Image (tube, rainbow, N blue to C red; front, side):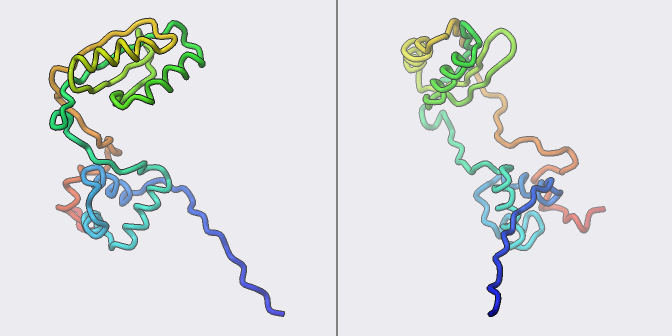
Length: 185
């Protein structure tokens, strides 16, 4: 009798990102619509290893997802407000209730559990003041356990970015096209 070949399961080991991975991440943060061939060229790889690295970065969780960023003013979301919310008690049940409530609202762009004077900081975008009033009065104030709500309006957006700062040893993403790693001085 001949033995059947055994299947061997291959699992990827988690490794620390190397310089090439950081270059890939930097370029993708600037433009995730690049084709694999364009990305490979910018990070000085051939397409197959580049695609393999991107898939590894996705599977490892370093790349969470790809999104399209819209201009809020262009789609009529003209009011941007930061709302500080305090709860009556900071007990697990109250925190869970508040968090599940705000997770269900599309106008809540960000929500942070905070230290300091308020328990939560929310960034909310709405089309107008009436929409903000309805959100605060008809929804936010009715969440069980909410004791105080303070709002601050953004008058002008001075800086907004989605790209995270990558390790300092890496050059800016735009510089990857200018110099190849093997030709650095």
